[in-house]
Length: 431
Image (cartoon, rainbow, N blue to C red):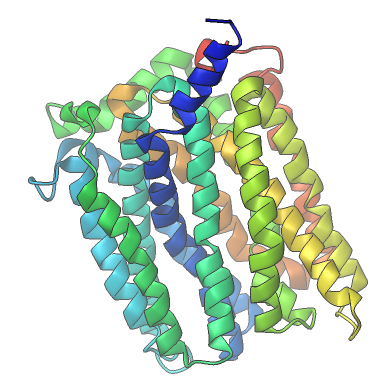
């Protein structure tokens, strides 16, 4: 056998296996409820006459994503449906809750039932965050270390493809159907993840569970700080907080921004599907394969630069102002959406792989919940200020410039947490 034949066989072993297919379903199941809160709910509230300040304040309902590490030890210690196992049991229960809550949400009126709308969206966020804990742990436990990079790349791309349901299909349907039917149809897309949960087996690694609840709470943090040292561990946590800050903030009001620029819901939905889907999927998969050879550290640098540069697309669109009625208006929107899809997708692919690599297999759920909670802080609390920032800064243009400059601190921390020339063996798939 030639030397060149070995890598080809290993590529096939890595890419063409059942675990990669499972990662498609975990990504889709994880992304759907989050993008519903990001895209569909703001568009629904805007068309119902709510102000930008009220809409941006809805980012606060996503607080479970930032605090999920508090109850993640419960998922490490206890099961909820013993016959399915710890991971799959929690996955199924939370997906059932999402299916019912999303379907019910569309039956409410934001102007008359605002308190109920807030309460139900909090339930969706809580169920979604808990599902993320279970899915992240499940995915980490089924993927061997050499498949972490590509597996998480596939997961992230499926995650973003799921966003096309509430961010594209549902917006198009909203021009033709009442909102209750739109939310009912959207809720049906929870079903593929439920089927996956019932079909797959429980990971063998999930057989380990902390002996006591105290062990489930204390040991994950003790192990993380003990392994890195306090100073290095704090730098890692700060990096996780800052790496996607600018990118996350600039998309906080993306759909209302497009609407305010004069685009219809159908135009936004169609462009998101066509200009966002293929650059995102092709770029994301190629980026995942490229990351296999680059290593996670170098991918964080290169993909991070792309992520920062694509923020300038929003600056450009805001500078142009409301879209004129000519043939170039859709091309401008397509360029901005495609750039955001590629930049954010690549950055998230490397970022999620970095977080998975940083966990200890014995404490997967709690440590990943801590890391992804920190990642969610900007989009939950800082993004809630987006509407006020737009008003305070005097418009969208200075707001997007601020987002651009907020992306740099996270990049600078790469010098410490992921140096360019440092390539740990478990950060790459092949030598």
